[in-house]
Length: 255
Image (cartoon, rainbow, N blue to C red; front, side):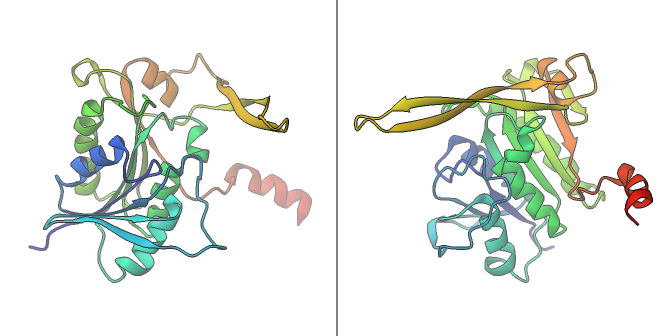
């Protein structure tokens, strides 16, 4: 029987604690080949590199785990792997993460972690974007690993295809998490605030800050509600962004 091949990437770089946790999840299911950015690429969504060269570096190789870094975005890592490095080989599942910080609600639109998972799904590979709501560098990933293994097993054993999941784990010990909730993306948006500062040379520089505003705080079927209620949230993500509800109305006025 051929050994399964699991691909791993992320947006916090191969040096992050969450990346090592993702390797731990992936190694339960077969041989792991990981290509991850060499620097933090948070917020890159599905950006690709088109004006610079890419360089691959070998980090470590053993019988069951190979880790490489690429000086590109998370989606660069997926495209490089599937179109070149692993071309002709069957990838059984992609795990992207484990992200330091939530990718619930509108966060998934900005997320490099989810950008990579979605890109992988373009290739027909079942893909799981895993995120820890705790964004700290030294976050505890034990619950993420436990639930990541549980969810990944269900994904790889199922025949639901195509499949791309946005999975977020609350800041709780595994034994205090109530379970898994399959839910929808919360409607909401980021309210950005621009802070201006002055450098030692008297020139202005700026920081984006702000916070997420939940547009439906009373809803009980969303990922934000699930996380606040102590559940792991699982949102199935589709790559087709067509607004089917608007097609007929637009056809009536445009065609």
